[in-house]
Image (cartoon, rainbow, N blue to C red):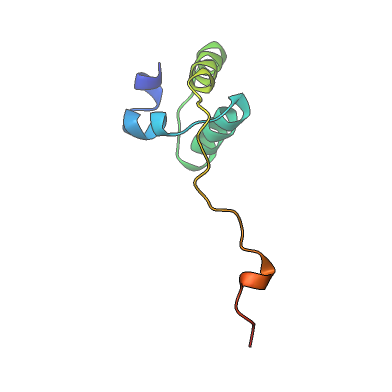
Length: 77
């Protein structure tokens, strides 16, 4: 179903590079519907797509460094 509904506009690599819970995928589908002309999806199929994509979610490490302490920042002018 992901192939049918998502890959019509996106590569599957793009879809699978995203990671999120059910709410994330529900919001994504709602956005695609509101802004990008996503066609109708039967409610049971939509629920199955959301569940499938949410189960694929993986914890990703955060690569951002911790914020610098204020004493390490340059003085403002």
